[in-house]
Length: 111
Ligand SMILES: [Zn+2]
Image 1 (cartoon, helix red, strand yellow):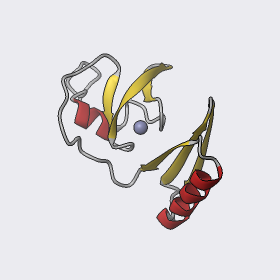
Image 2 (spheres, rainbow, N blue to C red):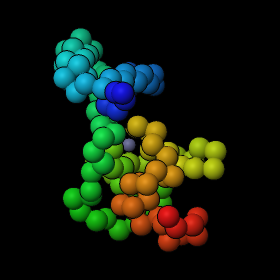
Image 3 (tube, protein in one colour):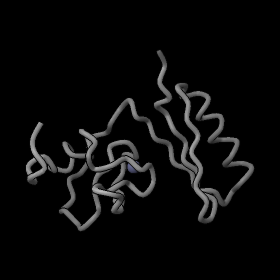
Image 4 (tube, rainbow, N blue to C red):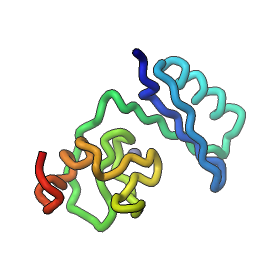
């Protein structure tokens, strides 16, 4: 079974749209197409298959976490009981978000 693990997240002004696919080449083609047709769009690729380790450890800042799927430091915004990456919407309950941000030890229980 194939999962749609690769996303292209597109921001045009305040509008946000997400395209998903299981194939990287399809997403890359779409990325190029949108980039050409809508120069103002902000595009983010997210690959859920390969969480990235932080390249540099930054001192903790409020609501700024390493997002292993964006491969960047991102603002995490409150969402129900969690916080989510403002770009790809992964929540801080994700294993790799916890792992790379040292969140396991903060009282929410260990794995
Ligand atoms: Zn993210």
